[in-house]
Length: 216
Image (cartoon, rainbow, N blue to C red; front, side):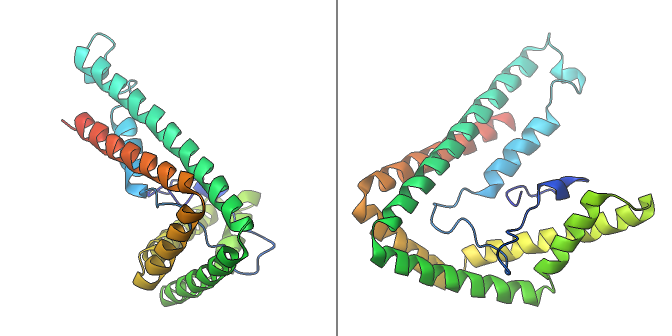
């Protein structure tokens, strides 16, 4: 998954490309961007303070119990946030489907994002075809340990570059302007989308605050 900031051994199993698309898919076009850092930081907190490690996480430690409760609260809010994302994604796509002028605007934005991402990937010498080949080869697993380690290292490096290029694409001024304009038109057509966006922003802020508490 490209939302994770750390690629571990075997994570290539989660990398997927649209085989029907000769180019790489552009995703997260219309949703208010769910900051990957929130998910990454929360995941990091769980890994660092898992109950199975460290004396401070003893079942008899009040501090550990409080930390576990905080972790559980963050986990539940992350689940809620993902559900809101899915709900908004479906709503936005339904609005676009029923408004041809928005579909045209969507297509133009998609093209802009694709071209921007292509340029940024080319600058990093990342070829999507090579990523797909690496994924398929690693999944097959018919190789020596040395070869597997080498290919996994190459795969991790290229996925990190892909993620960086994707992040830069989403933050490109022209892309952000086009995306903001499309979101405004969607919200005009269906105000419920704006309300969902506000709920997501509020929940993200709560998650940031909750995570900060786990670091004290």
